Length: 168
Image (cartoon, rainbow, N blue to C red):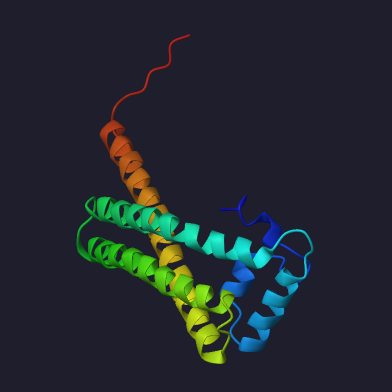
């Protein structure tokens, strides 16, 4: 999506479509839409619409990937870490739902329905989506480190007390 949305990165929108995700007022969204409309040969409003529609495909895959990865990792633990993995996995699916609602809001805005209500709701769904997705990625990183630590600890404890000889 970075390729399809490359032209959306302008001096007014250095982060591209993310600038629209984080536009929390109608005035900010209007400024973004106006900066994209005045780009000359490329109609960046149309590019943003296409990019947003493509995101519907992407969000299914990333939310299911995060969900399954968190569930898989959680299965390696018990207690609190297991329970958190189950909750965070469901949060990954909720991130996908928030992304759907965010995309719907952006499409309304891109079709000219610019209001403080739509922009604020789009912003809120975007923030929630990012928090949930980053939480899942953080859980996966910590879980992988804990599994690695567990394996190293098991290997060290197996070798503890054994004699190590060096032959020259």
